[in-house]
Image 1 (cartoon, rainbow, N blue to C red):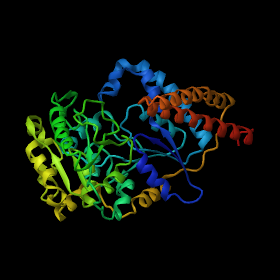
Image 2 (image 1 turned 180 degrees about the vertical axis):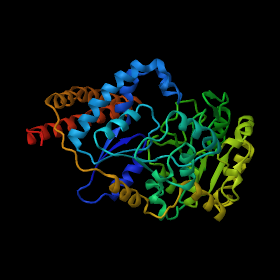
Image 3 (image 1 turned 90 degrees about the vertical axis):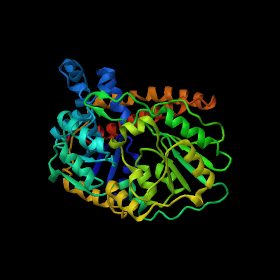
Image 4 (image 1 turned 90 degrees about the horizontal axis):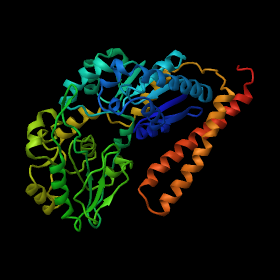
Length: 439
């Protein structure tokens, strides 16, 4: 089976799936920026901010322009990779939906291996209706981690027979997590968050509050203990850059680092509204949940109520109690209870090490015969010309590394993306030469 996958912050699940492939299977990843960047050239900025905006009538010219890119891209991907299945983490992204339809027109089934897990009360009640109205499920089939997540999609209008609970492939690693060992300073993992993340919305009206004050106060307290704890700060990959109260005594992990490995290697996890708290629960790690203030009290009913599950978290209800938790040390913190484990599994789904295998078996049942479509010489030449961009990005990346610029990470991604299309160009050239009659 040949799989082409749209990789939108989806790497851990794809890694797990890749590890379950059998000999002869292939998995090709298309970085999301490749299509996102093309969409940015066609649509206004606000199309990426509101779920309804791309579907308003005044964007017809944008859709026509983008559709030309989609048809050319899908034709090329089918010709060069000959996929039996197109896999994506969700089909609610407006610029991905034309790809779903184009692959299906070409006879390649589309399969959503849903990457999202935790469903908060606000997401269940409000976002489900908005998704059902503007971006209903259009792929052939979808796997989800839990029954709660399936309930979300049914509420959004999806056919229950087209959604199956498999567990989350990336969580297979937690089936036998082992136990962390405290040696020297205990290792604290702090999961940072965007200042407007998790806040509720009513249609297109965004809640005007912010977590900034609470986040900065949390970080100020944590920073006071930088000499007692080895503090690792992990930002969300999509988190906007903002000011921080941390000094030089903490380590900032790469925002694209594997959170699972950081959790497994931590002795203590500190976080707010993140699925990683359920993951830490599964691993038996003590958790501190800093949550307080006017904004929290106002929107608390719309959030995931970690503090309401007996024995799940050590709830710091103000900066003083956060300080006291850290002062008393890890030995004084409550470990996750059996009730907490049961609640975590409600959101994460079954964790038995077999989610990847179950998902792959379903994919095989939906895969189509191998398409035989010959790439054109024009398509091959277009991809090979991107080699010029690769050289530019490589030189820029090298200079950024030499001068220790933060741009080096972004330039490295562009370098790798361009090189990936060069490789595709050579594969396409080989197919062009091997199949001169298009058979």
